Structures are given as structure tokens and as C-alpha cells.
Length: 481
Image (tube, rainbow, N blue to C red; front, side, top):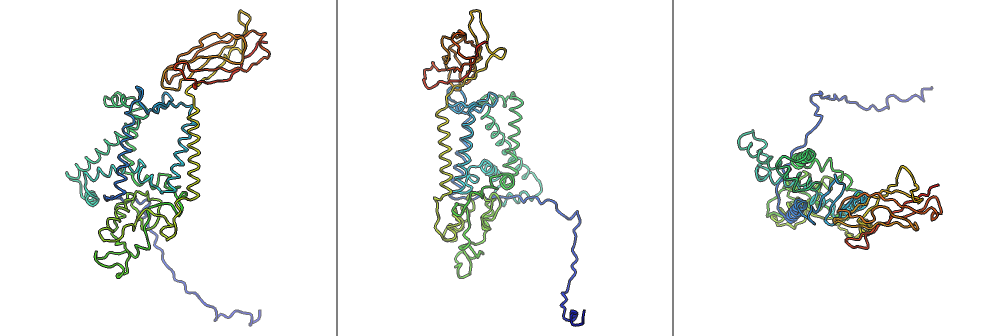
């Protein structure tokens, strides 16, 4: 290499490097887990909170009253798992009717999708049992420990007589209400009146007692201690609900253009002269939120659309004599100043699918016959010849009365000429029970053309008289060779 091709050492730039000593914390200084900060939900009044409370009271009363309703001398709604039947007023569902339950679950799922696409997570904010019970437990807190600030101060003070009795009274009410909830829930699966008597007198079965205590513990833990943890970390709905949102979904949102820049100011001051927006940064929207989020940070999966921040902000706007709606149920499209499309293809799709599923459910329910027949052939022999020289087949018939009234049925067979029916041809079956009978059919071998003849057993209800209650079940008749 010549001297001309060698790089000029003087022209090369040298980048200065500064050594930084990184402090490595000790293992004892590293916090492996940061516990959540307890949320002291502040009470708020307003339109949406009154609506939420009324809806909560209505459905809570409905939940508590249904197990006590009687119909035709029995519990109107009873999901008897032991007997494998569900009674819903005049309708009795059996394992053979699981298609109806499947349709109901599908209808419930698409109803949730439809409502979420239209109104966001209003189910979570207004009807979800976790939210309803959480607000009930917060109500007990307010009665015994006072407002949010008083509850916070009470937790910070050392244990004394005043703190002890308030905490004891609160937890006692929590446990008692959880116990009532558990008994009511179990009352949907076992006769309610007998359950209450047996539980109070300590005569309930081990299974019933265990289930009641388990659900009491779950209710007490979920609504009293875990609260927003269930919504944030355990509920799958909060994770996939964003897939149903679009720019025209109504959600609780903060109007950034109107509210920023935020900051405190005198009530009579003009915010425009101060270079401020309508948000006075009072932080009430955070203090009333049951999940502890700041809605001003934008749409978050933790938001349950309960509207507490809407009512709190509207109250502040009213006192400041500003226009309400800084935080409101609105859409992303509306916040951008564009035209909102309430009726849109996505909503139509969910509505059409929902209507189709409802149609399938109604059709399945309308064509359902409250009667079932199971045929079991004699396993010892396909056929036999009796003393009269006739070919005889033996069948065991299981007749299930799916209705809630005692019924009488007439049994016949089709597909055989000049046959002899030996056994019961008229059977009385009690409501929601199974009756088993054994019959035999004998036929002259000269009337049988094939080794195997297709036949059908027909069961028709004759008492009470109802021509629509009839079922036909196919079977075979074997000839002897």
C-alpha cells in the first residue's frame, strides 16, 4: 500500500465515550410483586347512577323471588340436576332437550355481542353480578365506615374500639348477605323451601351445605375483597370486548378538545382568558370510578361503562355553570365531529344472526313433543317360536313423560300384519317420570316375507286427550330361520 492510499489518521473523528456505572440493586431491594392500591370509591348521584340502582334492585329482587314462586304445586323454576330435569313453569327440559339449552346460550351470546357493539360494556356496568354485588358491599361500607375519605382515614388509624366495631359490623353484613346469596343460588337447584328449613335446622345434606358455604366464601371474597381484580384480570369479557367495538360504539369518553388544557380556576373566571379548557382537574371522575381508572386517558379495557364519571363530571359542570357532557356516552366518530352511523353493517349482522337463532329456538320449542320412547330389544335371542308356532320378538319399552301432568298413552305397532300384542297396550305415566314395560309381538311365520321386517312403535296420548302428543319410533322384527 502506498502512502497515498493510507487513511489520514488526523482526519478521523473520535467519538467520546463516557463510562456510566450502573447501580445493580440487591435482591432484597427488588420488589417482586407490587400489590394493588385499595380503591375507595366515592359516592356520586346522577341520572345514570339512579338508573343503575333501580335496575340492580329490580333484578336482585327477581333473583331472590324466583325460587319461591310455585306453579302447579311445585317450584316454578327448578334445575334438578339429581333427577336430570329442568322445570321452568310449564316446561320441563330433560337431557334429551339440550338443543334448547344450546339455542338459549347462543342467543345469550349474540345478544351480548349486539348490545356491546351498540352500547359498549353496559352489561358490565349495569347488570353484571360482580358489579351489582360490589356496589352493594360498598353501600354497607358507607353505612358503617362513612364516605370515601373517612374510610381511608379509618384504615390508616390504629385499631381501637371504634374501628373494631365498624369493621366487625361491615364484615358481618358482608358474610350474612353472601350467605343469603348462596342459599338463593342453591335454591335454583334444590327445592327452596325445604332447603331453607334444613339449613336453618342443620339438617341439610353435606352436598348442599358444602355448596352453600363455598358460594358464600366466593361472594364474600369477590365483592368484598377482589372487586375490580375480577374485572381487570379474571373476566375474559374485558379482554375480547374490544373486538366488537368500532368508531360508532357508544362508550364513556372524555372530550379532549373541549377539556384540555385542564387546570383549576375560580368559578367566575373565563377559562378562555386563562388558556384553559372546561376540565378543572378536580379528579372526581377518578374518585368515583369502581375500577380506579382515569377516563381522561382515553378508552381503556378496564372501563365498565357504569357512567359514574359521567354523573360526577356533569355535577361539576353544573356548579361551574359550564355545558354538561365533558364526559359522556358518545362515540369516537362524534368526538371527531363526524356523522355517527348508529345503524351500520356490523350491527345488522349481529341482529340478523340473533333473529335467526331465535327462530331456530322457537321452531325447536314448537315442534317439541313432551314424550319420548326408547326401545330395547331382548338381548338373549333375536326371536323365538312359541307353543302356538308363532314367531315372537320381545321388546322393553321406556316411556318418558316430559310434561308436568300425569298422562295415559296408547301403544300400537305398525308394519306387521295379523300380529298379536302380548302385554300392556295402555300405560299411565306420572308427570316427569319414566315407566318401563316389557311386551312381546307374535306373528305367523307365513306372514313374514323377509328375515328382518322394519316396524314402528307408536305411542299416543289419550288422557288428557291431545292429538298432537304422539311419537313414532322405528325398530325391527326378526323372523326365525
